[in-house]
Every structure is written in structure tokens, then in C-alpha cells.
Image (tube, rainbow, N blue to C red; front, side):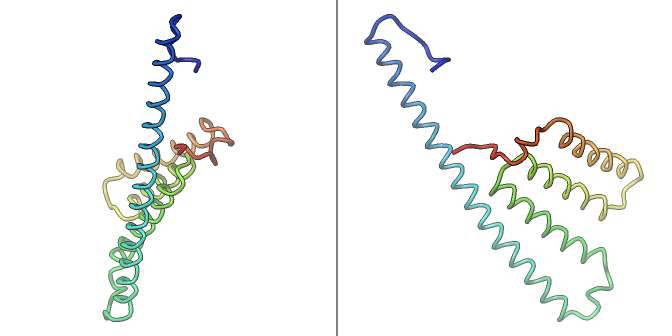
Length: 150
């Protein structure tokens, strides 16, 4: 209780301690509830991604000329990949996973978009920035630590 309030009156101090303990219980409850919701969203997202992947595989074998539009195929498959990275980030919230999700999403944008060269340059600069953040601003021990403790 380094940052807790202190009182010279024992009754007041007991009341303050009780309030602090109550606040910690509420905070713990909300952290667990949020973690549960994240897991639920991750499970639902996996189900949707598996269904989308199943549909894509089905279309690959049933639609003639499916691979004629390679950009469309890449768009669908890379969207599924970004979704899987997002699920991984929800399940294991570490700085490394967050940086990987951002890197995959930006890379997908660079591959699929045919914007002007300045937009592509900005995306490449963002990816370089993410690598620099990982290399210079995040300690190796923090890369594997869970960011949100339950």
C-alpha cells in the first residue's frame, strides 16, 4: 500500500483499507470479465475465419476460373491471415504479438493496394517504424510478457 492514504485514526484507517480492498476486488472482477470477453470474441472470430477459409477452398474447386483474378484470391486469403493474427493477439496480448498484427495488416495493404507511390512509401515507413520499435524500444523480457494481468 505504498500509494494508499494513511490516517492516524485507527477506525478511519480500517475504513480506508476496506475501501481499497473493495476497489481491488472490483478491478479484479472487471479484468477477469474483460479477459473472458476477449476469449469469447477470439473463439467467435476463429469460427468465422474457419468458415471463410472453408468457403474459399470450396470456391477454389467449384468455380471455374477462380484463380483468374489473383488479386481477389490474395485479398480473401490475406484477410483471413490478418484475422488469425488478430485472434493470436487477443489470446496472448504481448507487445510482440501486437507488433506482428500491425506488420501483417500493413503488409497486406501494401500488397493489395495499388495506391500512389507515396502511400506505399508511407506504409513501408510504418513497417520500418514497427521494426525499430521492436528492436530499440521494447526490452526482450517484455516481448514475451502478457501485457494484461488477470
